[in-house]
Length: 121
Length: 153
Image (cartoon, rainbow over the protein chains, first blue to last red):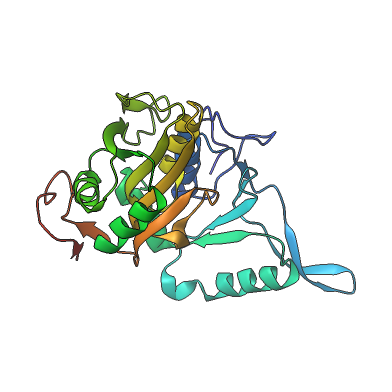
């Protein structure tokens, strides 16, 4: 998906965000609408290393600096999120001071209903 | 409702809180809560613009009639989930210098919270990830009038 050209007001990153899917775009617009400062994929967390080589890492989609909260959006079906859940568990173990919240497809659907978002890809 | 009313009555004893209800879903809740509150209080209403991706950002469609500087303000919410609109509301009202600002919500979905530092002091029910209608909650403006809460299947 090309870099989003929407004129975001609350975006705090230096480069235009390149979203992975429409759900991320919609979430960015909701955050922007409510004036919540946000960054897109500002940090990659190393989860596992072997001989100094990174073999597993995790980059949450959003960071909300005022909340000190990372947010990961997944549009995979609930049955397919096991791997992501495992990564999240590892992240929490390795970085216990990092606040991260995972929004599942059903959460996004609920938000879409509430905010009448167009999530068509 | 009686339990919430009793708790808030104790909390606001000797004071005259202003109950602020964002329209429209909290209308039924605030009227019931008002009748369950045994301290003198006042009611006021405001309305936030519904989310519009192409719009200029969140704003008040209807502002309070009352001045709130020096008042004890209790926001009466229907539901808090992400906390985004409540966060805006709290920030906006705090700028007006209330003596205190607190929130009571009928329903809460804390697992969906994006904004954590909200002054929520009382929660009616923590609810699962379901859509509710009735008791003021609507689906495209329908079902608000149902006397009880219903889970929409």
